[in-house]
Length: 391
Ligand SMILES: *Cc1c(COP(=O)(O)O)cnc(C)c1O
Image (cartoon, rainbow, N blue to C red; front, top):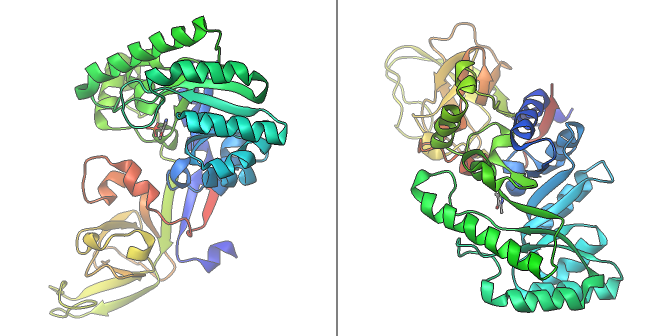
């Protein structure tokens, strides 16, 4: 029923995700906590369906950006011991909720630290915090001149705090152009950690690595990693992939990308019709038939994240073949040329992103700019499209 109701669906491949996690866990080391980053609606994969699937594959730690995402993750999880960590936004008014629900959060301002202590005192339960240090990204992060005060607050109110982590985030570890800046950040972090340790502040985990830094700078792995894009089967960028296969020639020798895409976006042929030569298709005059053609409609449009800029440019897969968009992309509908694809009929599967037969529509090719901003394309897939976990 859920399937029949909707014009399109997202399938999440559990076996692909399992392979990605096992590859990444082997790479970072068996004892390193794998925190699955699920901000941005799990990079478009859908928090509600992704979290239970990841749990079935052994994941017990999730990172979100904000408290609303944390609440979604808490509702979606099935295991008591599964932990949710907020890396970014939480209003002081929601700290109580986080504490009550054992959700940990980054602390990068003394204001939040004080508010957390107050809330923990009020509730009678420890706040689980991660000290997020400024090391050179200059975005969020507690600055060095505030460390002293943080330490005295932590010591004074120790009974209200559980120090889950000390952490930072790198400013562009996917690109060698940022090498010097990242090195400085790594050095700063090491130095700061020692400083805190000397003052008897010993958080449970040190964590700094996202996908790119874990893959490009193994020394950033430490004892917990926050892995987003690569668990979904994407390299942060081509440079990171090239860099990786250079370091691990056996990966290259296998001629197979160790990461597999988890997400496939599918729809169906809604209707087909024959259009004689010399006719315009759809609104206006952007597409003129050059011969007798067969046109198919697909119930996907720009309201579903299929951009209007893909008019006469986009491609979808039908019967394992590439079918070009013919005419304007509408709000809920697009038309494709199927003249050269034999025997297409109503109800046939259409793949927007993912594989069909030997063909694949990658997220990068789906986006107009081909510069590997997979992140941006993925998160724009609407949350209203139903997700299904498949083998
Ligand atoms: C998004 C994010 C990550 C994960 O980044 P990926 O490149 O997707 O692996 C890790 N840490 C923080 C603080 C983030 O915001």
